[in-house]
Amino acid sequence: MKFTLLNTAAVAAVALNGANALSLVAQSSSGDLNGAALSSIHEGAAIDYVTLSPGGESLSVDLNTTASLITYELQPGILQWLAVVGGVLQFYPEPVGDKFTVGSDGTLSLNGTSSGFYACQNINDPYNYQQTWFVLYSASGQPTVGDSCTAVTLASGSASASNATTTTVTSAANAVETAEVTVTDCPESVTNCPARATSAAPAVETTGASPTIEQTNGSGAVAISALALLGSLSAFFL
Ligand SMILES: *[C@@H]1O[C@H](CO)[C@@H](O)[C@H](O)[C@H]1NC(C)=O
Ligand SMILES: *[C@@H]1O[C@H](CO)[C@@H](O)[C@H](O)[C@H]1NC(C)=O
Ligand SMILES: *[C@@H]1O[C@H](CO)[C@@H](O)[C@H](O)[C@H]1NC(C)=O
Ligand SMILES: CC(=O)N[C@H]1CO[C@H](CO)[C@@H](O)[C@@H]1O
Image 1: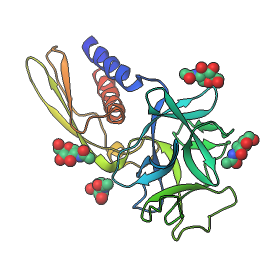
Image 2: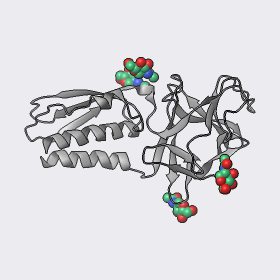
Image 3: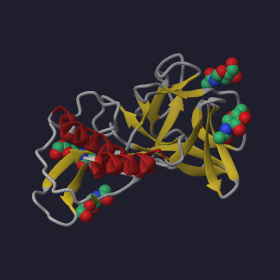
């Protein structure tokens, strides 16, 4: 069964490549915003306001756990720092003293607290993107700007845009059985993810040929889901 472990290790290497890279998504009781990707939009010289894109794709950012800073590489060699400036969460040309951490459940905290983030529209941003969801920060409660602010938490995860991801595990040479498993692409931090609730290890038999893994909607974030799946598969084999 060694091949199973090797294979799992290979996927783990992919998932952990760039140890501090992460994507962030919104979590909200508002269905439209729950799972929305964290992205950004140009609002000034090297200033990009953080936006939420339901159905969009999340930016890949880097978390420096030592400095508690999150950076985004705008262009090769040009970094921006995640920061709250004027109450707006944005990627900014320099760090401003905000400390960002990601808890073991994946939740993003600013200066030690995960509350205070709000998704708002119509915030009178410089470029007047009326229908865009911007992320504001207000430690004192719901902001009054815009016409529809909704509290959100931000968490490490994969956007639910691609929702259902199919992972097919087949044995390479002698395909004895193929298990096709549909994995709903919930962020790890969503505790009652319907897919994980029913993700009992499927009965897969192999004859010793190294299994291959095919993924649709493949991305780094999906690889993590696949890793969790393979973890349960290898546990099953052992
Ligand atoms: C993280 O920040 C620390 C302190 O500023 C710095 O020494 C280190 O090089 C940074 N690490 C990375 C990977 O950028
Ligand atoms: C976070 O803490 C730093 C250091 O005290 C402070 O400069 C910064 O304004 C705080 N950020 C927010 C959004 O309150
Ligand atoms: C994800 O799947 C669920 C269940 O099929 C569906 O209700 C929901 O609208 C889907 N979400 C997206 C973003 O496609
Ligand atoms: C969000 C996304 O990329 N969804 C795609 C997942 O893969 C299926 C099948 O290839 C596509 O139809 C979806 O558009």
